[in-house]
Length: 267
Image (cartoon, rainbow, N blue to C red):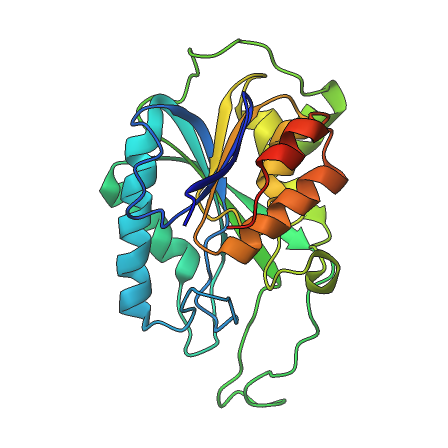
């Protein structure tokens, strides 16, 4: 398998297992933005999304340790995860992964609540109209913001491109915008480009290096490229790598089309 399937000065797509890859240098990443599998039995091509909760936490600890090593000392980490889950049993996912990250060494900064406008219709309430066993389900997701050693960013270009209106709106920790259509994108769990775009402009400088270790359909890469950041995506599934490449051509400002076509060979 060809590990690096596309690379230029600003963009790299790595088809590899993030737990074993050697393609990322330690202390080289300014900002990590990712949405890992939620362990709710989504039918990915390769990843098992139906682990026991203990196995899921062990897996989360392993990959977050890799992220910690890859980040610069003033690097940031935006983790998009559910508040909780009830498929397969009630679990406090947001709280548990936040504690895990802190045990690894991450410093906690804040939590953004994402009110996803097109949340799927609920089909279960536990005990209907009864206090015997009702379920309370919050139709939101979290973006938990961590940093490695220091919050104040001293590396990079020092060039920010966030506008006044964006800053005023996005520093309010309740974000409301729609999720992404699985059918439209062709991936079982895509997130909208709006999510990484906001994190990129809020928490990184122009020219910084962004990493998404669960690249999926490539939303983080598109947002990075469109906002003048370097970006690295890691994805274990070759078909999702190809999907990300196609989306980059269609939805990004990528203009090195000749080089792209020359480099993009089937894995």
